[in-house]
Length: 135
Image 1 (cartoon, rainbow, N blue to C red):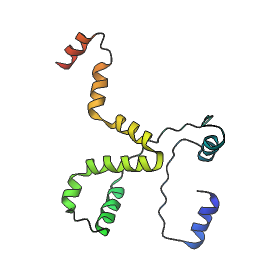
Image 2: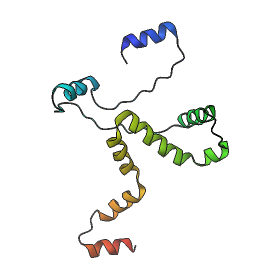
Image 3: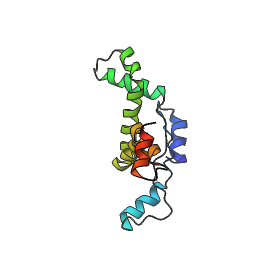
Image 4: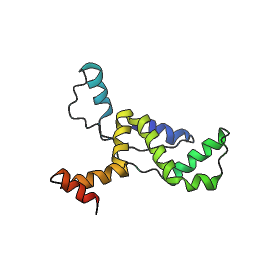
């Protein structure tokens, strides 16, 4: 979004929501490098930002689901907030950053994988690793 677009929003006051994401790369620079320089990236970090799904985001999803005719009890929906947040974050990541970043985010948030990495750190042998799992 440019300053001109922000000026238009201020002038005409449309009912818009602005989502600010720092995706840590220079979009136009990266786009030109994709189109004209055979994906030879220079000075563009293309890692996904670490964002958190807020209660307001889950509320908006629920409102939109109801608007499309989905019948979900609010108490049931709220009780699944951790799952809803994880799925919503994956969908946002895929839409904004692509499937590769969605996969990377999933790896970072996988608790079983995190535990496995923790067990592997410092293990000097397969036997040592097995001993660590019995603790």
